[in-house]
Image (cartoon, rainbow, N blue to C red; front, side):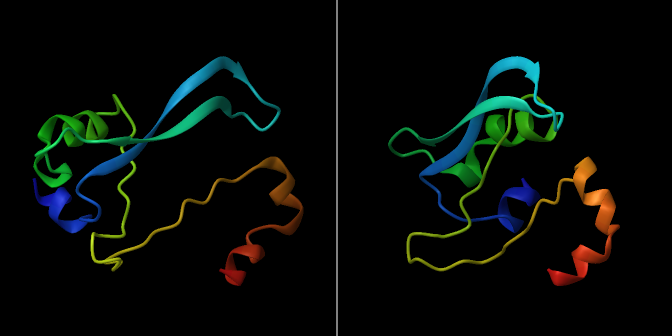
Length: 97
């Protein structure tokens, strides 16, 4: 898969989460437990089409660890969530990033 080559990183483990509760917090979030899972011996994340397909189809979260076995990072990204308390600043706080 092309996306697996673009977001290549650690080939032996990945991150995901499990929902702990269906109830939403006051910020609208669902309580979750974040975990890092190893891949079975001999499997590579970039070749695991099931994990990638499930992620792209919205079935399961896939957190790629961007640091490879040589401790080099080939890419990075940020996730910005907008909460109601950010409205008092408008979007001006984004420029700090």
